[in-house]
Length: 406
Figure 1 (cartoon, rainbow, N blue to C red):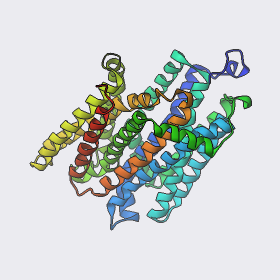
Figure 2: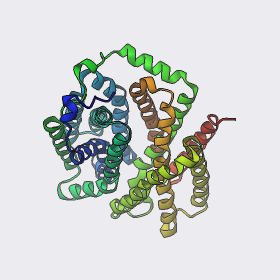
Figure 3: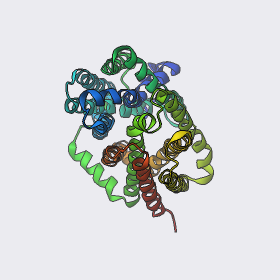
């Protein structure tokens, strides 16, 4: 609910530039926490799990799992306690997880710490959006979120380079110190500068019963169920590629030293998807655009799989094929996820916040169930992850066709 313009909270809004930058930092928590870890995976594997190097990938999926669980509760908690306590509490959990990860002596404890980090990171990400919704609406809200997302899209491009720089100077455990510093800066910014945006009389009692009712209503709608499954498949294939990216660049294609640069280019290409989507969606429609995107992804991935199995899997040509294909997977994520979220929520307006939390939690948690096994089958080639994308995109296309009007 937007706060009326005459209330003191609106008069105490931060300057637009500062507010946008702060929201972008909240949004960036998740991307920074995942992508900055990518260059650390080889060292973590050699130190903590040398007999099963693929287990190092779980550093990423453990964080995503925690984030998915936290997503289900972050929104309702903020509705009950206010936005600032929920954001500050989330960062407190996030920082605590980073401290535990920094000192973790075993891979098992490190994974547990990353789950805790993910639980905390869900707060800033989900509640940050609610913060924007409290203060702005309509075109103003779109402008703020657009500016924030523009800044946010830079993070995946630069985070691996930041991680590599930190690792080169102080080792992989120092990356968690960077997360602690990031969290302290963000929580200090919100705590000292941002006024509370949800008045006490607008808050709703936290109730597990209400969450279950919302989940039941969301899952009782056939189209919403389908869109949620499609998002699960989309997230699953993206996380599978993300978790194996460092090994593919290093082990398969011998580009380990240049991984941050290549990943930055890949992220930059993917970032253009939102611009293209904004132009296409008004002419093609959200449902048709997502359906066609998954069909194209399934077909192109099948062609690339055939090329790799046919011998075009190594060398410069093999790397070029993989790089173009990998960029397309991230690009398609940017072209589809916003549309799928909008489609899933268009009939859930009366419980939009709760429905968004439920859909996001389900799709994220079950995406880990897909990405984890695909990543663990890495065999030195790109075959497992490409196969996973072929299957996920093909299923997503078939499901999307069931939502098309006949």
